[in-house]
Length: 90
Image 1 (cartoon, rainbow, N blue to C red):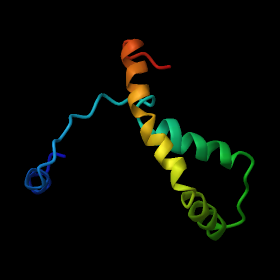
Image 2: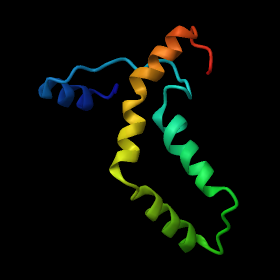
Image 3: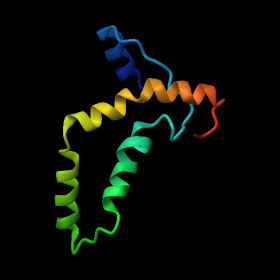
């Protein structure tokens, strides 16, 4: 968050801004949880048109909240593993 208006809002809310670690697919919930799971679900899926794709995506993102909660709450454990592996992929 580098835009001045964003910084001002975050400051007014009293939120602590944490620096983002270097990119790692091991630490990005979108990579290790969301898109990995989506990729597996898409295996051998075929769509006749864009509407079928849109319908499939709409249904997929309506997964149980627990699925998304699990992905976010794996972050501390994955961060520890990243530290233990000296930043190497695992």
